[in-house]
Length: 256
Ligand code: PLP
Image 1 (spheres, rainbow, N blue to C red):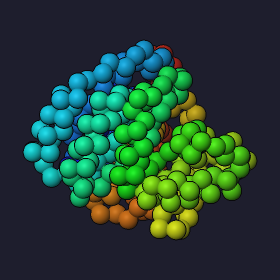
Image 2 (image 1 turned 90 degrees about the horizontal axis):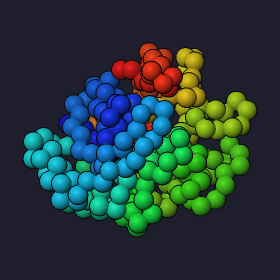
Image 3 (image 1 turned 180 degrees about the horizontal axis):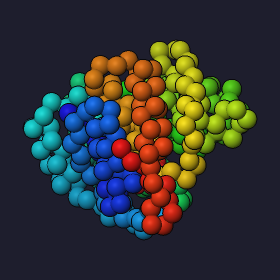
């Protein structure tokens, strides 16, 4: 079982509903514990509704009692209560591999991690086995601008060294010619570049970060090495984007 921990997006376009679909597409069985309710339509974020820490903790215990958790995928954490609950759970279960997608903001600009979550969130970064930031996220975490593809490779390395995690730096936001969609994997002191497939990309697709990290976690749980898991997750994501559809608000929604 792969446990997805993240925001509950009622549209299913992102958050744990998206995670569950991507985990299934990657061949895994998904369980999901919400960190908070992330109320939104496909076009606009409305608000975060916090869940109590004990509710989150009890939900994690229910999932952990029921199945052997082969990977934990963490997406939007949202609140301090959620950050502390998932940090405690990950600490009590040190054998579970953690894939952390450091979700900081919605594409619409809304903050998806409260300031007072940062101390626990920084500890979570160091508990993760794999981190999957995009360009704005790695800039924020390292607190510096990344101005070229070369600097992006160095940033992936620096984040990996600082946390001990493998880093999959997603290239969807890269503004550099010929580099958009090239993912940088830094693992065990080695850099691997994963080029985009031939399918058309959709800049406006929602939930792509959720889907990639979830599929990656499912492939790791199935025994794939990190680079292979990242490669397969990227292909699966591209398929989900290609078979997507526009929401009633015109936002491209992944299907799979
Ligand atoms: N998780 C939740 C619950 C969200 O609401 C969002 C964005 O709104 C995200 C994650 C991030 O989505 P994406 O995968 O598009 O980065």
